[in-house]
Image (tube, rainbow, N blue to C red; front, side, top):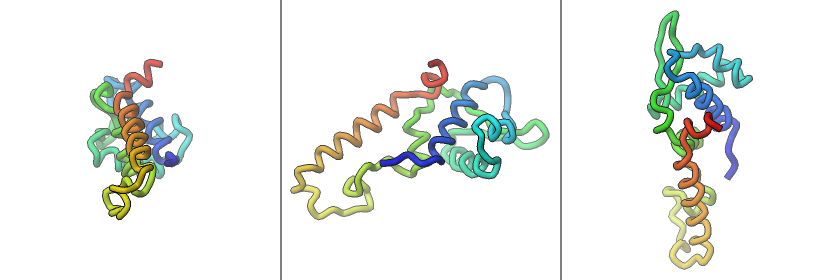
Length: 132
């Protein structure tokens, strides 16, 4: 499993927005400048995050993006939204019907590792990251 730049930038954006909770919507230009990325790329990532209801948006002159309750948003939720899944090997994918799954001695290793990674990421909230 390799985390893509989309997830890396997405997590940076979410941390930035979480650190400005209560200050109103943050304009896209400010978000892009903060994470050193293009507005177009940020907008694509924010669209995915909005569809997952992790980010809110407002329109107009005072428009922009914001998060509500960053203590309830896990790193796991963000990464799964942007990566579409955090599967570490193909045999764990729901779409893969591995014929050896029941007989494979290594399946338990990959499944346990997958559970540990996801559990770790789900326990870590945006608030816990920005407080460090």
